[in-house]
Amino acid sequence: MLTLIASSGWWQVGIALEIAVIAVAAVIVIVIVWLAIRIAKQASTAEQAVEVVRQQTAELGGIARINDSGVRILHAARSLRKVAVGK
Image 1 (cartoon, helix red, strand yellow):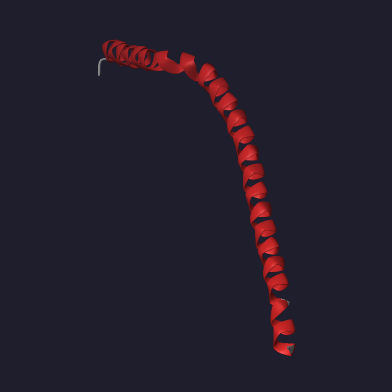
Image 2 (image 1 turned 180 degrees about the vertical axis):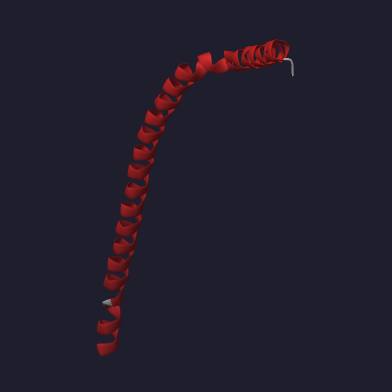
């Protein structure tokens, strides 16, 4: 009879452990979802910042042409110096 009474209390311990495991799992899921929401907000902010940088640097496409013109001017100046100095 004593064994029956002692063993009949273990199911309560089992249920308590199951509830604890479920509670821990729920907390972990909540934390993961909360972090995912934070990451999504930060990604949105970063995306907007990248768009601003893209707009600010869009005009840099003409730099190759400007550099080419600078090189041509430099070559022309060197040619003129050779003619003027005689070297």
